[in-house]
Image 1 (spheres, rainbow, N blue to C red):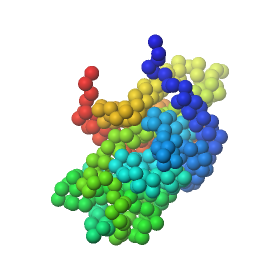
Image 2 (tube, helix red, strand yellow):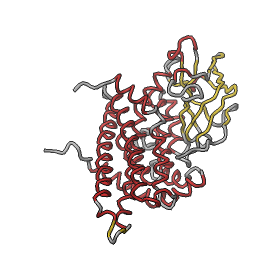
Image 3 (cartoon, rainbow, N blue to C red):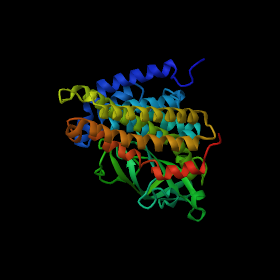
Length: 381
């Protein structure tokens, strides 16, 4: 019987090639990227050269046309070495997916082709007063003839200031609530676009998170994605697909921490033997590995459902993100415990991995919100 739970060879080959690239060109810079709070340009360059910067982009627009599972594998392997670097392909997919889902062919050619060439794409939904309650956003786009004038600000925008393009979700008819929200593409070079200072964050320090300001930003109607009023639905559809990339990120962080803890357990000796020989350590490592593998199977299943547009995607997407990120937080903490005092200092990467893992429980919908989504979309056996 053919295995239903083994990756086909092409995915295994992809994993191996990404792992080698990460080991050679991304992981060596991870500690400095975190300590210096700087964008991982080395990773961006390496990913672009390897066709992994925005691999999800269809081939007709210059991308590799990577499916959802391939993207998950790419992000998982990058996060295993550097969490901040894994946000490059993840944010590029998040920012551009509304265009892929709702844009016309001319729009896709106009913005997806330069994305593949290295022009980043960020996603502007959250605001100071509109986080979990995304429909409460206040950024407005007012139509004047064939143009739209955008005013407002967006909060917690990943890779803001680095990305050239921004999907902006704005209110176009406040009286209609969520049905009065529309999606637009704004470019960094548009007059009236500016950025706040980088946030000083606990983790993912190499990915700049900034506020984005729109001061009478005037754009033509060809910057509008999909129909007027369809923006909120488009934003939510996007998250159904992209929160799986956060699960992948969490998986990579957890696996990276387990790798470090396992190696250390064989190197560290106490009471005349490797600490791996103590049952307490063995049980910790076994539980870590077991939970990671469970999260991996759920995440891969969610990715396949995303690619196929299956009706239970909402449940599986939320479940994968919620479960994998909770496991990542648990595993990275346990990895620190295995390393003891060494785990608490930056000589080893597990403390960085724990700080990064915490955010996976928060962004693209807190895990409390994910549980609400799951409850509202319980699958039928």
